[in-house]
Image 1 (cartoon, rainbow, N blue to C red):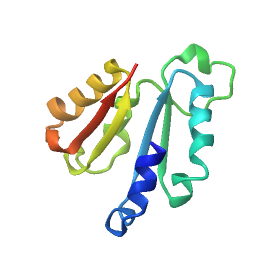
Image 2: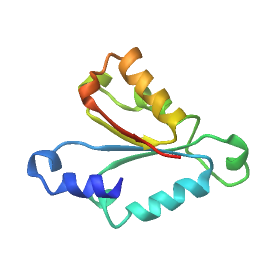
Image 3: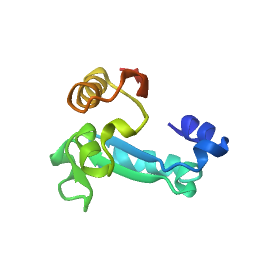
Image 4: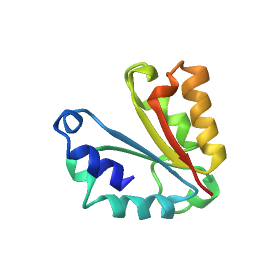
Length: 121
């Protein structure tokens, strides 16, 4: 994620666009680890950051005040334009990638050419 954001920031035409980072972790500790990694990089460039945790029990008693659910569920709630107006870069375990691709392509008619993703285990 950091490499993609840093590469984009090197191009004037991309740097002037708005950018959003949606990150899903199982619990708040997962999200904090990524937030710390991004601090010296893209977050200083005005990136809009949307973390979410998927296991409510891991958030209980931690003071977590963010979103709880699956990361792909945030896209229609947080992005103001129709989803087909954006370019998407996403990576994660196959079930998350498949759910995101389905939401975007099947439910919101985002062209496949706007979806760039990598599955990892």
